[in-house]
Structure formats: C-alpha cells, structure tokens
Length: 392
Image (cartoon, rainbow, N blue to C red):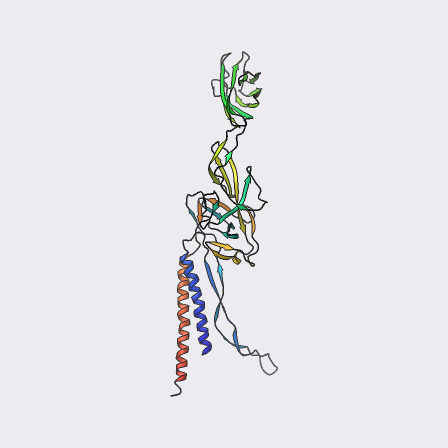
C-alpha cells in the first residue's frame, strides 16, 4: 500500500511536469522562432518479489515477479522542426530557411538563436531585441574573408564610396547609312577623374563621302585623331570600333549602320563620383550590400550561421536563444546556403512551431493522468483506513 502511495506521488510529479511543459508551449505560441518541447516518461526501478527460475528436469522455469515503484521524467525534448514564415516587410527581419542558427554575443557569452528580429543600434551595430551583437564577417574594401574570425556586424553609416576615374565608355545605337556626306553628329558624355571631378568629352561623328563610312573624333579641349567606322551593305560594322580620348577608351563595336535611324549615343561609362551610404540589401547568403548615392553597390559584411551535430543537446538560455553544451557538439560556423546551412530570407520571421491542437490534447492527457494518480493516493488511503479500523 505504501508502494502504491509513492507510485501515485511520482505520477503526480511527472504529470505536473508535463502540464508545465505544455503550458509553456501554449504561452509561447506567438513567440518568434520558438521550438515546442515534449515530456518523455519512463518507469522507475522495480522491486523484485520473486526471481526468475530456470527450467529443471522435473519442472519448468518461472518468470520473475516485480512490483513497479512509479514513474519519472526521462527527459524533455525540443522539436526543432521549421516554423512557418511570417512576412513583416522589414529589411532587418531575417529568417533561416533550413538548418542553422544566428550567432550572437552578449556579455562575452556566445549564444545561438533562430529569432531574426534584428535592428541597428546608435553605433550602427546589428543587434537582437535584447541587445546581443549579431556575429559575422566584415568586408574590407568590399572583400569578405569568411575564413577569418567572426565579429560584430556593423553598418558604416558614415561610409564613403570613393570616386572612380572613367577609363572606358560604350557607344551604341545606329548611324544612318543614308545620311548626306558631311553630316555631323555630336555626342557629349560626362566623365570623372580620380577625385570625382567631372568633365565633358565630345564625340564627333562625321559622314564621309565614302559609302558606309563615318569618321569618329574626340574633343576634350583638343581634337584627337579620328578613326573611321565602316559598315557593309547589311549595316554591320566592318572596321574601326575603338577611339581613345583623354585616356578614356570608347568602345563603338555595338554601333550599327542601318538607314534612317539616328540613335547613336554613349550608353555607359565606368567612372563615378564619391557617394554616401543610402540603404542596404540582404542576400540569401547573408551578405549585407550597401547602396551608395553614386550607384555603387559594395559588400559591407556577411552574417554567420552555426550548426550542431546534435541540436537537441542545446540548452535554452532565454530570450529565444540557446547555448552549446557538451552533448550538442561544437558549433560549426559557416555561410548561409553552404553545406547543411539554410538560406536567409529578408523581410520575414520564423513563427513558433507550436501545434495548438496537439498541445490542448496533451493538456487533457496530462490532466487525466494527474487525476488518475490522485485517485491512486485516495484509494490507498482508504485501504489504510480500513486496516487501522481493524482494531476497534
């Protein structure tokens, strides 16, 4: 009878733990990237009342007789299944599609999380809602070395994209093959020197008397020697195609020579003035790309992800974060989209993977289990009361 009392008590404790775990799951149904837990039960040691007997010549063997001593919690496992995507529209919100964890640093401790609701602090550092620094690799002159040590990801708000001198330019479009001899077309293009100062180069295209031929010359204050563009009867370029003016190489290989159309123009040049950081984008590999006022797109940094041999061995550290343990294995840090690491999506957050229908079912199971074990205690008490009433 005393054994049944203690078995009932162990059942109450175990089912109370199940209620606690289930209640925590339901409480976090809307917590970003929360992973639901489940309670696993196992029986405790059993008391041997009769040992097993081996078969003899004159009698068969007998099985052992044991009385169980109750139940205990074997473990609380975490379900790391992917949660649904929730679109937020915020570029700083990030979701991992697949395996992996963001790496954060707080008070000198390295933590791991799948909750990607990040923001930038006053110093331009990428941080989690509780102020932990998001880890990754910072770019040096637009180059990211993912083989180096990770550090804080910062958005250089005062960053300047340096000016680039114009070295090449492209001319496209059509020169009318039926233009009268002596027709002159002038096309201006703004170019930059190494300091970002602009100047204008004028390309002069003159129709010669020869069939299908134009002379191209440049003027940047002093007229340069011209080159001849020649076209065949089908309008295809057959000669010329290059002109250098003031150190800028003009590529005219894309110019055609059909009749009537006069669309020739300078389509591009590779110089820029200095620019300031205006915005940024996030790639699927976690690369932050800064967009500058001069049109440059320069890599700023790349967010690091970590994976573990045994994610179930991670310890919950609060704040939707985990810390590594001796049974999780060491963190393997890498780039998103490589190996077993998932890709990143900007403007989305991972929702909780709590299944409310399953959790409410677990509540009923835990409640009935608790009631049944309480009945064991009351029944054992009634039997003890009958026993004590034997002496009147």
